[in-house]
Amino acid sequence: MKLAGIWPDESALGEFAAALARAVTSPLAIALSGPLGAGKTSFARALLRALGHSGPVRSPTYTLVEQYPLETGLVWHLDLYRLGSAEEADWLGLHDFDSNGDWLLVEWPQRAQGHLPAVDLKLELDYAEPGRRYQLTALSGRGTAALKALAPR
Ligand SMILES: Nc1ncnc2c1ncn2[C@@H]1O[C@H](COP(=O)(O)OP(=O)(O)O)[C@@H](O)[C@H]1O
Ligand SMILES: [Mg+2]
Image (tube, rainbow, N blue to C red):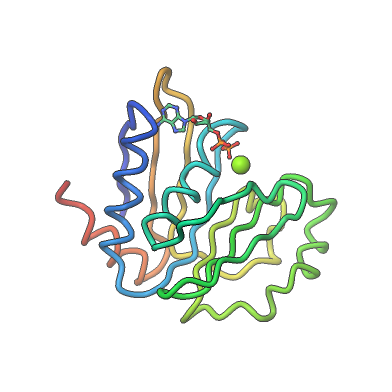
């Protein structure tokens, strides 16, 4: 199952992230892809806010991983743009990732192919100036359930 469309501005992206947060009943692993500036971090930030995080959300460009312990579960936010090799992902602590209780939001997942937990959703972003085009694909039963709950809008 797939959902696709255009977010004309960042607030449309924020509303979509909030709707997704409302639609899910259990934590999801989401791959975020698209060129630099496409909105991957913006989406992660909007989703974290919608999940109840109120502090700042830094881009994990240099740290590669940031964690946010929220009521709905621990959120792992990864940006693998600067990962030297896929094998380096084994040093990010993901052996502690709980696929039933934790969220995973990963930018540049292709840099760690074969070294990441399975994802439920793939969000592909691209420029559609002045907005952004998105395509959200379900890759698991949980992902499909989330898209079905989101679909009528
Ligand atoms: N739907 C949108 N329409 C227009 N601009 C957007 C939209 N979503 C995000 N932006 C802007 O695009 C930029 C995206 O940056 P960022 O989220 O850091 O991208 P990435 O993490 O993909 O490199 C930000 O300046 C943000 O304000
Ligand atoms: Mg980013």
